[in-house]
Amino acid sequence: MNIVDWQHPIKWTRLVKGVKRTENRFIVTCACGNQRPLKRADAQKVEREQPPCYKCTQRQKAKLGYKTTAEKYGKSFALPYVREYQLTHPSVLNLAMMDILDNVLFIPYEREVRCGNGLIDFVLYGTFAIEVNGYWHTFSQERDERRAKFIREQGYELLILEQADIPDAADRVMEFLGESLRVAI
Image (cartoon, rainbow, N blue to C red):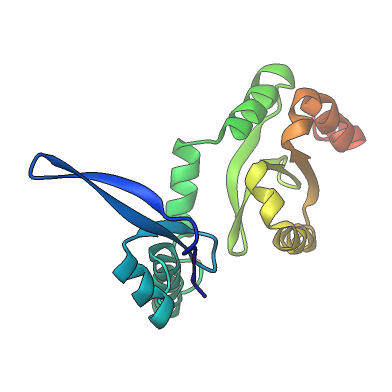
């Protein structure tokens, strides 16, 4: 549902054939929170017809496109491309974790290992999984819990590190591996 702020128009200046023209624009707020300034006639039309904003239409198109592609090629159609991209473009947190594993702990690992329809950030010795969660994971906690449960069901022991855990990640990894590290070496 779009809401138009008729009480507080803003002055909008634009150039028309080299001449400055000032008009009133009205802020229209979409249900998703996206705001856009529109002329009076356009704002009236939006109020009357209630069309979704551009962001909402793109979100709807993306969902439909994903659904159609998943039906045609299967749900894991994009996984090889995502894996390849993440291997060549690691996040800052993954770079930090790689540095710790390579230069502090000297532990061999695999990156972006496939597990079901997802990828595990780091796998150590074939059975220990490490996930490094950044800012975006705060928006999908429920999904992350289901994913962690699935990873554990696949036989991995899982350590989840948050962004704040990175400074003492070496200690956390050593504690996580515990006696198993000595046996593996």
